[in-house]
Length: 187
Image: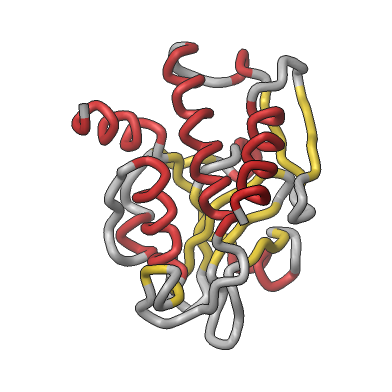
């Protein structure tokens, strides 16, 4: 397992740190990771670089949990995960950021991001229970996201272009500033 995580970290690092205007890289999970030219980002270069490093940690951590069973109310690899438990666990482990307990509450923090401006590490939200922001996942790049879907399923990567998810997309949030504040408070 450590080899797999190390392998993913190298692949994600290459993608997120590429110098090309746009770069694509397919990782072992079949996810095309996309790196946007840093000139397109807002904020200063050190903030961008720091968020990219933390986003890399988020993605590696998330991918290492692929295959963990869904469990309503679950919040650890040992118990299984529901969608918000999965996202909370990944961000806690990768960034030391403590997120609220529900998808709806998580949707209230961070900066709103347009679908066409999504970057790896952003959170994506869906209306799965006839209620806005009732499901959350982590954007991987190339219209793919990783999440804990529902009972009887496991943590996995899926396409946001899939009809079910495309119809239910609610929005996205970027937690770059919250992650940086959390890191500053930890020091």
